[in-house]
Structure formats: structure tokens, C-alpha cells
Amino acid sequence: MTLRARIVRATGGLFAAVLFACAGSAHAAADMSKTIRDVFPVAETGFDPAAVDDLYSSAIIEAIFDTLYTYDYLRLPARIVPRAAAAMPEISADGKTYTIKLKHGIVFTPDPAFNGKRRELTVNDFIYELKRLADPKIRAPYAFLVQGKIVGLDELAEQAKKTGKFDYDAKIAGLEAVDPYTLVIRLKKADYNLPLVLAHQPTAAVAREVVEKYAESDGRNQAHPVGTGPYLLARWVRSSKIFLDANPDYRGFTWDFTSDDPADAKLIAAMKGKSMPAVGHVEVSIMEEDQSRLLAFRNGELDIMNLEGPLAPDVLDGDKLKPEFQKRGVQLSRIVDPEISYTYWLMDDPVFGGFSKAHIALRRAIAMSYDAAEEIKVVRNGQAISATYPIPPGVIGHVDGWKPLNAYDPALANALLDRFGYKKGADGWRTQPDGKPLVLTLSSRPDSLGRLQDEMWNKALTGIGIRMDVHKDKFPELLKAEKSCKLLSRVSSWIADYPDGDNFMQLMYGPNSGQSNNGCARMPEYDQLYAQTTTMPAGPERDRLYMKMTRIVEVNAAWRLMISRYRNMLVQPRVVGYRKNPFLPSQWQYLDVDAKK
Image (cartoon, rainbow, N blue to C red; front, top):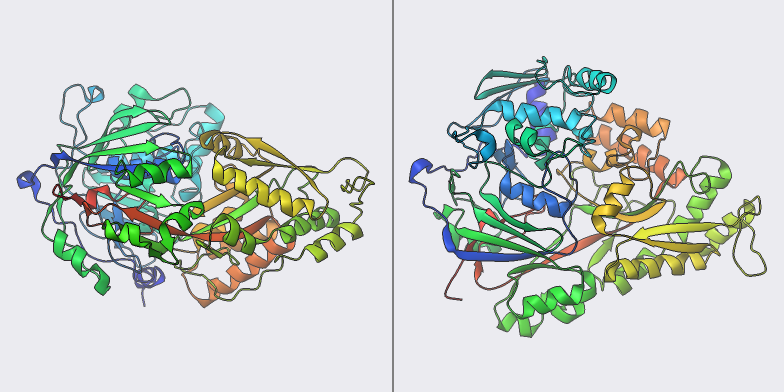
């Protein structure tokens, strides 16, 4: 079997030579009388593909920019299909060279940066964005997607660190534009997940002229996105409203998806053959409070919303809608998110970090003080499952029945603290072994969910005699601080960027500190094993190393795994074609609106 064939097999059947049918100039324009109203529970951070890593900003980026590949809308397990690419990549026998053909005639939304000219998408726009991910000035949170992989790119980044300027004009062997429509990517070693990476929003095509005209001093262009995707940014009221309009220059596609699930038959019959996108406007509101979102949905002011756990008793009876919502024709699309929710602590903090026996005992005790089952019951109202393994269900590499070392056990937690000198004073609070105060600061959002998480952790820590302080800030500010390794502890979630375990095991990889490694953990044995797994296809051998790596994290108690949430998407009856895809952050381009409902 060739290495190319092994790459296809390793992605679990994710490749498929399925194209979006493009109607070209005959494509029918979206109906500008139709609007979909969606909602985010937290504020966006911006719309530069290289600069963001939150789900909500990524949803907007997914709609505005084109990646080379994407996911088939209905197929599960997930499978990769071309988006801006004309076909699936040609892969060399050794798995290190990818040749990708681009569709002709794709154009950017008109913008003054193009000086009145019609600007066609070329492979240089993808090369530019891949280089931006490596530019030290931008501090891309997804730099790890390209680091150590593309021939010549790391060296270009190192040169930029010395000179203070990234040379975007420098040609490197790893990124070659053979012609405007042919891209060759040469890798240092075979990467079994490259097509999945090229379906992820940070690798979307970006026009250099636009960045150079509108970028801030840090090289990021968060406020003026210009892409080739189905929608464009019409208006933005920061942290309040985002308005998208259908892109009149978008090439379009014909809705022609299939599914093995009989439950999708009605959806397919309603949508098959339609020219897409069908909806002219998308309005996204930012509403941080749960009750505000549900009230707006009840009043018909929202068409789509994710039902967070605290609201579940108002809407659900078990895993079904209550009669009130069924009678109104509300649709429920329910999945377990391919995600993990976890609490990390800063691993280089002098009190809670470090690798002495006492420091490890402290973290293990904190981890064992937390009752995830109670969170599922009290905070999530049953709308979650326990996360015991770092790779969640539905993602390649997940292990069923894993028994974690730091499961809930407050008695053992207290015994550990006693043994390693974290003594209780007369007031019942523990001190450090040297007698100094012991206080953990948890950072959280100023919304109802954040307050509930504060209460859960305060209860857990009080049970083992550790004081807790709370630091509140807006979601974008928390993300900014954690990328600088400035937060001591926070409840964080990671939703799969692509459906392979590598995307989760990299969360503890030392070189990813300041990117995806929020606790800035650096464990040499773990790092060595992770580097080894990146050269391996999915399978039993890689799984064994992942299990060994998981034990290393547990022994050092670098985090506390908690839950994976159910995503309960409520959809008004007038929205046609909705079925939640776990790997697409937004799906507006696949939907229609029935004006009669």
C-alpha cells in the first residue's frame, strides 16, 4: 500500500471526490428578502482568519472566506470535499508532496484595496495566509498548524524574528505557485491530517492587498474582512450585532447532498436542487444572558439558537422538545459536541505550577475535588456527558471506558494535601508548605454560566480547604490574556477543528504554549511522544501512544477534564434545511427560509 493510500485510510474515509456543483454565471442570486437571525452567547473577537481561535468569530469567517476544502454537509462520519479547490489533492507516494488545483473564476468581493479591478482568487492567496500563520508579529493562535511541517517556512519565521519583518515575497520550496491555479505544498514529513487542516478557517484565502491596506499595527486585520465566500460583512456593531449580506459575486452551488440517516429524508427532499446560498441576509446578535436568548427565540426574534444547559428544563423533556415547542413546529438538532471542557492551571506559576512532588500533589488534589457529575446535573441540567479521555466521542482516537487517575475523590484529595504539608489553620483554610496563604484565582465570564462555574469550583475548593478568588472579564479579553500565559486558571473548551485525535492531543504540547496550550504546560516526555505521533497514521499504534500521553498528563495533573456538552440547536419552523454539522462553525449557506411560515 502506498503512503498516499495510507493517508486516505488514516483519515477514516474523510476524503471524497465530491464537488459542489457550480452554476457559474447562471447561478441564481440569493433572495434579499430572506433573513436568518442567529445568536452568539459571547462576543466575537474579530474576523481575521490568522488571528482568531474562538468558535463564534470562526462562524463568521466560515461564511466570508473560502478554504480549499470543507466538510460534506450531511455525511457522518465526516468527509472532506473540495470548496475552492477543483478536486481532492494529488499526493505523492511518500506523502510529502501535495498538488492542489484551484477552481477558475472565483473572485473577491469588490473593495478599494483592489483599485477598482476585479480581483480573481489565485493560489498565492492561500500561500499568503499560510505564511501569515507563521509570522511572529501576528502571533497566530493556530501557528501550530504549519510549524515544523512546510519546507522552508520555519526558517522564514526565524529570519523574521531576527529582522523584525516577515519576508512575504521570499519563495520557499514548501509553498509553490506553479501557476495561478496550481499549488504545490512540500512537507518535511508526511502529515496525515493536511487535508483536514486545509479545511480549517485559519488557512482560508486572504488577499494581501486588503491586509496591507487595513491591518492594525500587529499585522492583524480584524475589522475589515474581504473574502470570496458566500457572504460579506455588511455592518458590525462590536459585541452587539453582526450583519452579513449574500455576496453577489459568489459562484454559488447547487444543494445536492445525501445522507444514510432516514431522518434526513424530509430535509433532502425540501432542499435538493436549490441554488445556494438562498438567503440574502444573516443577522447575528450577541446575547450573553441565557434567559434573554430564550425569550428572543420564543418571541420569534431569533431563528436559530443553541440551547445551553441552564435553559434545558424550560424547553426539553429528556431529549425531546416540550409540547409547547413541538406544536409551534420548532426543530431540534441535537448532537454531543466533539469537544472537551476542562479547567487548566498555569503550569509555570510558582504556587500552582511546577513539578515537585508537592506541586503535583496540590494539582491532583484540586482535580479530585471537582465533581463533574454534579456539574452535569446542576449546571448543565443533564445536557452533557463526562469527559474522561482527552479525545471526545466522534473523533478518531477516542477511547471508551477510560478510567482517569484524578476522578472525583475529595477524601483522597484532602489526604494528599495533608501529606505534602498544605496544613489547615484555625480558620479552616490551608496554607502553602512554607506557611504563606494559598489562594487560587479562577478567571471566568461575567454571565450566568460563568457565575455557575464559579460556584461549582468554589464549592469544590472549599471542600479541601483552599480559598478561591474570582477574576471576571469579557470573553475576548480572557482569550487575549490566556494567549500570553497570564491566567492562573480558567474553565475552557476545545471544539474539534478537525475530526482527528491530534487536534486534542496538541493541547498539551509544550511548543503550543501561547497558542492552544492554555496552561502553558511543558512536559518533555509528553512533547517527545506527541512529536512522534505526528508522523503516524491513525490506528492502534498511535492510540497506544495517546494513552501513554494521557497518563503523563494525569500524573502531572496539568488539567481537570470535565464534560462534553450536548449541542441542542433550536430552529424555527420557517428555516429549511438545518441539520447541525459538528465540524462546520456556521451553516447559513446551506439553508433556506420559507416565507409562508
